[in-house]
Image 1 (cartoon, rainbow, N blue to C red):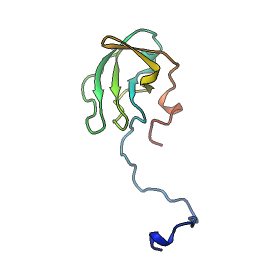
Image 2 (image 1 turned 45 degrees about the vertical axis):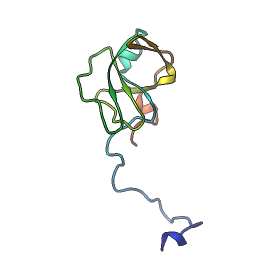
Image 3 (image 1 turned 120 degrees about the horizontal axis):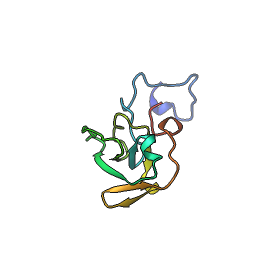
Image 4 (image 1 turned 60 degrees about the vertical axis):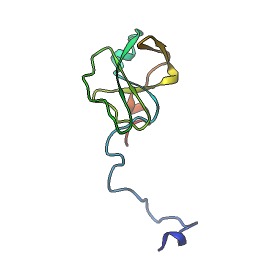
Length: 112
C-alpha cells in the first residue's frame, strides 16, 4: 500500500528495523559519563575529555574522572551511567555530582 494511503491505518504486527540505529550506545542527554564507583565517591571528579555526536572520546579515561558527553555522542567504553549536567556543580576543571546516579540499565540512555 502506498504510504499516503496508510494514514489512519494500524499495522497487523509490529514493525521493527532490521538494523540498530545508531549502531552504538549513545547518550540521551548532555552531561557526564561516569563509572559508578567514581560517582559514589562524593569527591570532585576532574573532566578527562569530551564526547560529541560525530566526535567520540578516544583517549585514555583515568579512574576517578568523568567524560563530558553531549546528546547523541557515543558512550565511552567503561561508562556505567550518564549524569545530567543539571545534577552536577562545576568546581574549576572538575564536577561534583549532586544527585543519586542510576546505572545505564536503569535508564533510557542506552540502546534497547
